[in-house]
Length: 288
Image 1 (cartoon, rainbow, N blue to C red):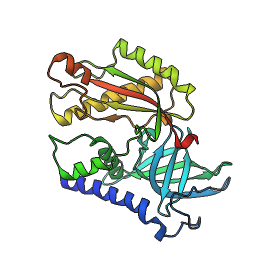
Image 2 (cartoon, rainbow, N blue to C red):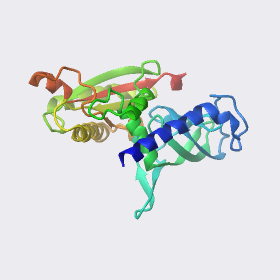
Image 3 (cartoon, rainbow, N blue to C red):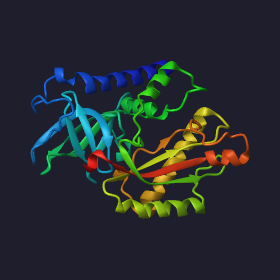
Image 4 (spheres, one colour):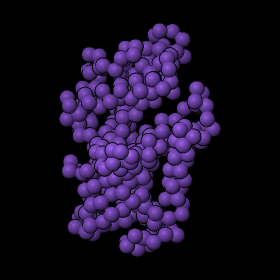
C-alpha cells in the first residue's frame, strides 16, 4: 500500500514536469499554440474547459498552466463547485471547499471568460489520489527521519509552498500555542487571531496560510493528525468569528513534528512546538 502511494506521488510529479516542460509538443486545446508561460486570455462570456497544474494561488484567483504551457488566471466565486471523483462502491462526486486548491494540484476547470480575460470557474474537478499526492509533497519538507524513504526526500525537494519569500509578501504572522494533545483554542490564541483578522481585509489580494505542528514526542502519524486538527480549528475560528472567506485560506496543513522550533528537551521548549503559524500573504505576481 505504501509503495503504491509513493508511486502515485512520483506519477504526479512526473505529470507536473510534463505540464511545465513538454507542453509545447501538444495541441493548444482549441486556443492555439502559445509560448512557454504565455498568458492566455479567455473571451468575455466564452465557455472554456482547461486542465492543468496550479502554479500559484491567491485568495480568489490561481494561475493554471496547461499542457500547451499557457497560463490562465482562474477566478473563484462563492458559487464555484469544487469536487473530486470517488472510485469503488461510493462512486460519484464528493464536494470539497476551496482550501483544497493547493500549488501542484492537477485540476480540470470549467467556466466562462470575464472582461479581463480570466476564466471564472463554475466547476473544478480533481482526483482524490492527486490531492493526496499534492498534500504529501507539501508536507514532506523537512528531513524525513522516522519515515526515511529516498522517494519522499525527493518529493521534499520539489516543494513549492506558498510561503516562499520570493513569491509572496508576508503582511503579518502570528503563532498560537496549544496544550498537550489538545487542539482547542486558548483565550490568548483567540486574541492573537482577532488581531490578525483585523489586518487581513486591508491587504490587497491577500491569502491566509495556516500551518499546524506538534512537539516531537509521541507517534509520528498521530502527530500529523493532531497538527492537522489544530490547523483546521484555526481556520474555523477565522471563518466563523471573522467571516474570512474560505477562498482566501490556503489548505490548512498539518506538519506534525517535522519542524520543531526548539530542541524539545524541556517542557518549556516542547510547549513552543505545539503551535499553529498563521500568515497573511500577498502574492507579488498576481498584484502586478
